Length: 494
Image (tube, rainbow, N blue to C red; front, side, top):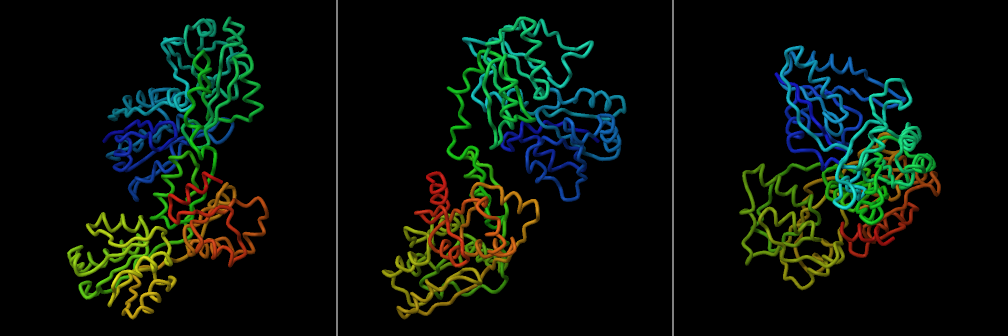
């Protein structure tokens, strides 16, 4: 039986360590803080006991005594207990106190370090806490205590004389008194300073000033916790070295309405470009069970989405079959509507012979015009446009449409709906996402009633845009290349 004091890093889920994720997946009990990364608990076992033990300045508090009691109580009976903290457990995380309590109770513990905000925030703001030309040392201090209280644990005269960078944790509410105390003790008022709010997250922002001005500038900018403050010459490098804010979608919030299993690729691409992503799936994909036709009987097998590929292979797997059930390359052609569908096929050992330049049914039908077809199989959703089947039948081909999956409405809860409404962009990647989104929010009239404060609408292409127009909505942005890359490029160029 072991209690693990685990650092979850500064907020960006990508900065969590492999060991932290491994322990979250194994834990029977997780006692977690307010500032852990979003989705940090997604990998926890369904039966794991999750206990919130967050603290917020001026707000809800779970006392340290109660947290320690929980760790001891569960540490005595559970095989693996994870105490999950933002940042690092031993850097202003009170992990040392928790470790002492566990030792006193005879409970084994281990420490899993995390990236602390005092390192991550400056780095993500383009501020090196040490620099050969200006800062050979760095000191970390807490701003949580009142610097004017009797018996302060901080030696302000020594800090004012410190020949390097000062990094202040939890100091937003005390920024004015801290700066005043440093200046009074002899630190130069014109020394560069910076405050980094929501470090490593898409909404990160940096306020620059001097030791004398930073408190007022931060107040004017309505900077709130969590934030890290940096005093020292290196803070002046922010404008030159800032990299996060230069990403093309930094500060932009984008709502993704794709099915949950399809949303990850788009969301990951958007986050990599700096966007804050609201994942609000309004459709759910359900695979349709059924028999697998004799694939060798067709000279054309056509896929109109990556989900169609997944669904057909799920049927093959259920029947004890695999890619060898497909006809030999010299006996049949394989068609994919676009690059994502082609990639889905390639991961299963099938190469697409036909793929149009644009990922729409009309372009696929045109690309197939030069292909000799006598009998075709089209694996697709239950409800879909008949552009490709009709084009093939018009040429005399026998066409079988195989419905291998369907999409159904997934309603948004109030929190999701509010987050979508507050986004800068609302993305639609198919006509079905349009229909299901409107169903999920109470219809087109209810959505339009929100007025001009609604998010801008980004459409993946003309078919999706036509569906928007049919419901009285006009896309603000439409991709010229009808795929995820095209949609992202259109938003960046808007």
